[in-house]
Image 1 (tube, rainbow, N blue to C red):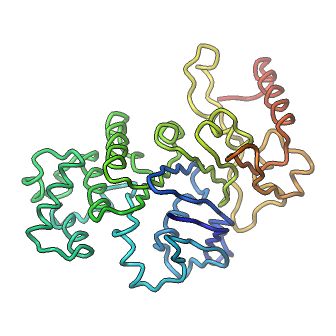
Image 2: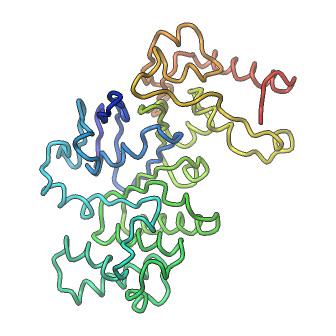
Image 3: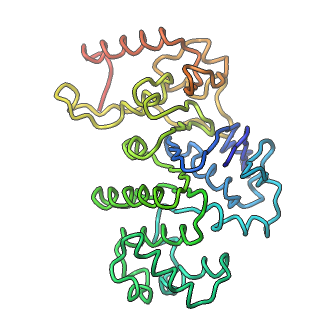
Length: 341
């Protein structure tokens, strides 16, 4: 349904060109859930906005690549053609519903706007569709709630309204950019369950962007791990969480809180800071922070290489070297030889 080929999204700034997305490739199939993870600044949101063509041009430009949606290259479409796709074919749910919803318009007006714009139906039918959508996303007394303002809703209910707006035209792809970050864990679970039920009902493909690996493990079938504007590992949930072949992914997994008796008092962090995307380091971008880095890592920039059927990783280490390195680090930790917080 969607194929991103060697996409580069660069941002022109006074200090130089920021390579926010630098050679990313992946595909999305109908009804599939693709999770994208990585630290803040890894390029996740710029990638999502690139698919929707919402990055301002300038300063954003695309020196290379294609974004093919059902055979059409979105990078070559005119604004009017893109407006027919946004909301209608590809929709987006943002992180902060209070920033996305207009505080001076009623919920019903904002929900009906998308329906009237793309579906060209009478206002009476658009109102019935709006009530149906609010019912689908679990808003009680939906007919009355159409006349409410965003500030009269809780955070979880506002997020449900955003999902209803995104689903107003039955899009084929739903991009969710950190949809549960501002919510408590109970409401987060409800929103994730809602997204699953919506996907089952409408057959929508979902691109889920999150820094929460637990959310990705629960929701996704395929996972893309981003670092410094690139995909450094991709594969199934099992590949990424149980057979990771990239030190950065392994480091992310180690930073999750553990509940077993041996490690429950330790919360490991990734030393250092993400690289400067204007002047990235030579060789592997992760090598200044990588506990496995060799001299070769400082000189050679690794490409994604196949590790198993659908598992790819960008690392110069062999599987044997990676396993030996992990064992060495874990033994040193047990002996108190490595710092942890």
